[in-house]
Structure formats: structure tokens, C-alpha cells
Image 1 (spheres, rainbow, N blue to C red):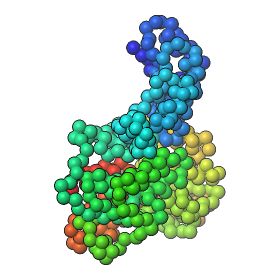
Image 2: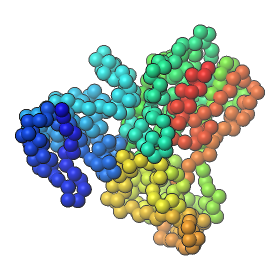
Image 3: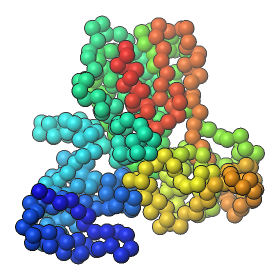
Image 4: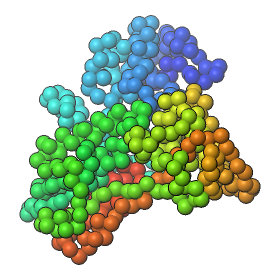
Length: 430
């Protein structure tokens, strides 16, 4: 019988690391406990005990080691241990006797077998987004994993290979296109992928410019290696027009061309001092020292942009029409980003819908009271307002190719998990 406990409580009045050690020693003294399973964090705090990608892998393993030195009981430690390399480091440094790896096994159930066989580069990386945790209690959606669309369907086994392989052309190398191409190749299709940019990843690659998104970059690189192992013909820097796609002669064409930035129909939205989130993250646009973010996205994008800008010394104000930030982001991740932004004194304004953009200012309306006011003191305005499907190629190809499909943001701009799940559903149906 073991006990799971927090190494320390980060809440005011909670016990510190010394208090955690004292608790562990008292538990050990009862003679009724066989091991201690130690974690760090709360269900809502900074950190949560299911730490997202804003923290380093095994960030608190040293604290677990301090406790291990103070008791004789075996110590199990869990917390962002997301690869065999990290697990081995925690054990070799003497911080724990056993490590826990939950989300890493969700991302790749064959993690240990691949590590044992020296195939670490084939392990599908967990990106620490906590989609697996949050989607059920925030949105009432079935359990799923962003990077592994087969999660929840393991009993069905892998998709079978097709009896009569066909040629598939995937247009777009974002999350939807990458997963579709890989799954189709695994089923035996002869797959070619065209991506107009110089690098694969689509808008997910843009997001990797933001702080603490290194695991997302690792996953995109893993997808590229996966396509290479499968023999998918990948062409970057290749834009697709309808005639070229028809001339390619594929049996199945999948359009995964992503989304265009959504620019709300507001007076002043086209002013030169107004910039889209994508342009700011990639450096195509530069913001002034004081910037207001128009937040019309219910997930991470506005907060991610605020993190990016405030880390660079900008004075940032987020303007939300909702009564709180990011209503579709669960508590196990929200505390991390809010802690980062709070430390840099990022300002939040809630229940205010932007109705106009003016030089140096926003005109807002309280969404319940209807009262309008002008808030000023800004050099730049940023738009974090989601996207609009870029499905023009799909529309132009209707009736011109044997089989045509559209998915990912070109179908409907949503989170990565929807793109990868949609890719799996499509390939399973072929």
C-alpha cells in the first residue's frame, strides 16, 4: 500500500519542502506504508500536478531526491517525465526508485519496446498539451490524444493494409496533412505530399516560435522522420494549383490547405498598426512597446501571443469578450500560462467586446451592460481571432479528380486534435 502526496504546497499557508519531508517521515514511522508516490502541484495552480509543456521535463525531480534521502521507503516520482532519456536521468541521479510516465504512454504505447530496441527516434513524443485531460471535463468530449489519433480505439487494432494500393496526393503539410499522409502510407497507399512553405508543420510550425513550445516542434520533426521511413514523397516549397493537381493523376486527393487569418469586420481593423498573431510570432510584423490583443479565440492563442510579447518586454493588455480567459482551456494547464503572464504584469480586461479600432486605442462595449468606452495608450493592436478555412483549392477541384476530400483547418479551423482525429477517420474509411 502506497500513498501519493505532494512534495510541497504552493498555496499560501501550505507546507514547504521541509514540511513535505516531515509528513513523509511520519507516514513511514507508522509502518503501514510500503512506498511514497510524490508529485508536485495542485489541480489548478502553477504548477498543476499534471504539468503541461510550460515546465521542464522532470522539473521537480531534485525535490523528490531530497525527500528520498530523508526516508527509507521506495520513492515513485511523476511529473513531466516524457521520454526514456528523462526517466533514466531521474533514476541515475538517485532522485527516485521508480518513475511514472502516464501521458508519454498515451502518446506512444510502444514507448518501452522502442526504447529497449534502440529506436528512441521512433517514439511519438507527448507534447504536454493536456488535451487528454481537459477535453472530457471542459467540453464533455471522448478521451483522445492530440498526437495519437488511435487512442481510445486500441481494441480495434491498427488500420489494415489495403488490398489494392492507390495513389494519394495530400496538399498541405500541417497536422492534418502530415497525419493523413503517414496513416495512408502505413495502409499501403503510394503517397505524395505537397507543402507550399519551406518547412512542414503549417500553423503548428508558426506556434513553435512562441515560448515553451519545443515539444510541438519535436512532434513535427518526428512526423517528418515518420514520412521519410514510410517512403512518402514530400515536396516542400511547392504550391498547388488545380491544373497541377489534376495533372498529377492521383486516385485520391486530400486538401489540407489550412486556414487564413480571420480579421474581424471592425472599423480600423485594416490600419497599419494592426497585426495578426501569425505575423507577430514569425517576425513578419513588429509590435510597438505597448500592445493590446483583441482576443476572439476561446483556447490558447491569445495567451500564447501575450506570453511571446511580454517575454520580449512589451507592455501587454488582453481584451476578452468572455468573463474569463480561454474558456476552453482546462485548469491543469491554465494556471501555468496565467502564472507566467501575471509575473510580467500582463493586464486583462473581461466582458468587453471590441467594436472599433482607433489610432492608439480600442473602443469597447460591455457585453452585458452595453456601455461603450474608449481604452487607449497603445502603440499596436494584435488580432488573435482564429482563422477562416482556406478551401479554395477543394472547391476548384470538385468534379475534376476521382476522389476528393478536405480536412483539417481547411474544413474547419480547430485544435490539432481535431485535425489528427479527422485524418484517422478519413484514412480508415478509404
